Amino acid sequence: MNENILATIPFNRPHVSQNELGYISEALERGLTSGDGPFTHRASRHLEKLTGGSRALLTTSCTHALEMAAILLGLRPGDEVIMPSFTFVSTANAFVLRGAVPVFADCRPDTLNLDERLVEAEITDRTRAIVAVHYAGVACRMDELGAIAQRHGLALIEDNAHGLGGLHRGRPLGSFGCMATQSFHATKNVQCGEGGALILNDPELVARAEIVREKGTNRNLFFRGQTDKYRWVDIGSSYLPSDVLAAQLTSQLEAFDAIQARRQAVWGAYHRGLADWAGANEVSQPVVPDECAHPAHLYYLLLPDLENRQALIAHLAERGVQATFHYQPLHAAPAGIRYGRPAAGGCPVTERVADRLVRLPLFADMTESDVARVIGAVRTYEVI
Image (cartoon, rainbow, N blue to C red; front, side, top):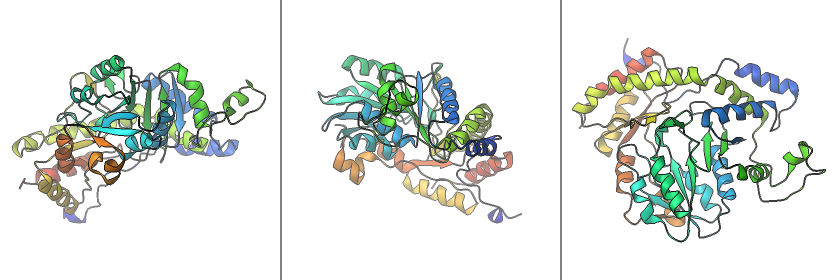
């Protein structure tokens, strides 16, 4: 059969776990479809086990979890937050909404994470926090970043949208910062279409976090019988997801090990099957340091230049394989220029990486035939 008439292998296809529809039906039948119901609590307990966090609060998105983190930090206009330029816009937006200035630092050329060696030089008397984004679920250098944060009295936040299930020196990602955020968007390893969570590792933040998530009210205290009425006591917003979404997420989290096993198999097949081709074509594969265990969130290749990146994406599309690029540098984006500032030395590594990176399809329901077809399609590409 001509490979051009085969069905396209999408970049992502959300996995549907075994109990998903049953749990959603159960939530509907109970009539407890608003937030903070039984499935919200079940999903939260699963997350606390996976991340080692003292408390997990489900949110409507990772973006909203980041916004909550920014509120809990008590940021004021003009405060600075150091973060990588190579990340999703939500990492910066959450802090800009509080009037803070994102300081965009460069990424490491190996893991593509925030380069911890460049962070300390960007600290000023206005710096309040460092945001570590675990790209592709491979941990940042958390020992070094933690030491820098402690030395300067700064908050360390983990944007762990890619990293649920990842480890650094045997410790779960999401357990290092005073707060961490998770994503359950449809593209993530476990998902509920749209969803997120705020992981709290500082118990002193929990009470206020509950208020912020509940529109600035002490509603949780009321329902626990700890106050005779609930009132508006702080700033906040509607960050709590429906228990129907939590039901879907609960089923996904219960299937976490099975989902991860299949994703790891796909990631490993790519890494082995493309190793000699990559070496022969001056293409870089993902780097995973020995002290890290990654959750197989995505698999990427770094082509020699933008021309080859675009040509490979087109080459794969012609063969029914949907591949895509990834983040564009925030420091050079229109809003990044308006609201933030780049590190003193700029972000040259980020700029090169953004032009060269291609992500391959990776989802739990890929068949061995799908994986072989992607590998075969990539291997037929000759670098220009």
